[in-house]
Amino acid sequence: MTRHRLLFLSALVFLNATQAQDDAADNETIALLYHKISGDPLDLANIAAMSPAVQRASNFDKPDVTKQEIARLQGRLDGASPGQVFTMKVNDTISEYDHPRSEFSINLFSPGHYLPIQAFRQQYQVVFANAESLRPIPMPKEEARAFDEQLRKTYRAVVDEIQFKIIGKGDPSGAVTGAKVVRAEITSTRLVDRAGHVVSLPKVTPVQAAAPGVAFDLKNADIAGFRVGVKGKDLEATLNRMFGLSTRRKVKRPEGYSTTLVVNEMRCMNIPDGRHHPAPGLVCITAMLDDDDIVRSITIDRIFPFLDGEIFRKALTQKYGPVASANGSGGGFSLGWGPEIKVGQSGTYNALTATFAANDDFMSRSGNRIPDIRLALRLVDAQWVSQHK
Image (cartoon, rainbow, N blue to C red; front, side, top):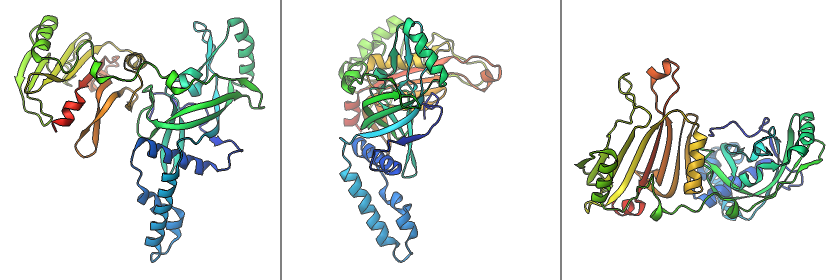
């Protein structure tokens, strides 16, 4: 899922005719590389069961054919090469001229846009890690007028001819969320009109040079100046000085936490009774401490008047670097950085999690009230939690 519209007016994606493989085969190779590089499991048995070969087989032959199909798929998975370059043509548009920035924008390379592909009866979303470096077409206003006139004649439509390779999982900008987000790197591209005339030749910047910020560093990470690994008594003194008296309480949690320090406990939650609506500016803090009175987790919630989630997302990626995980859509989403921490049999969360959500309820929505926004940042000592499960 994405918090933006699909990347182009027509969702048609098709491979360059010079490719030896057909569309479906390349889409499957993209999916296989995604699973191979990211480590996300791929249910080969289920895919084999839906294959034409198995569907055509008699009940007597089906077990043997299924086994053969699984072996074939496993061979393709093992043989998928991360160095493979894919070539595609994508129907796209160029934006109106941005006068303050003196540039046009290529929609495909704007935040929240992706290539949807189907493989093995599943939906995958291909995002480009170096897209931002390709997005703008800088142009002086004197030249932009004539360029814009040509775009209007073709309804701003162009065809992106792109070459890319698969490099991992997830959208580093955090704008595209959901399952099976394939991270790719564009190696070359050009924009042409419907007649094949070159419109623009964007300069390709490699991912390492194009990535925003620096790699996430858990040891030095902070949320609003607060860090894990510090002494509980020092944090308590800071909270008392900044927010008034904090509350210390003994607890017993499976993660190994034994004490909590809280400020405005649960007051940032919007209780749907019409009387407990937290006001913008309210800050709520919960810190979890271990037996040695060391802070191992801290969560900060703050209520804001309505603001665009893009402001939140961009500020966080500038501070913490490329996003490791992203979930949600529409009015709420969460972004994650740092190592994953396992929860139960299959759940995970990241060492740093940021959540953006509308802080409203059915009573406030019924009055057409613009919702406040609840922003939450949670930082966890991932190494300590992993050792104490």
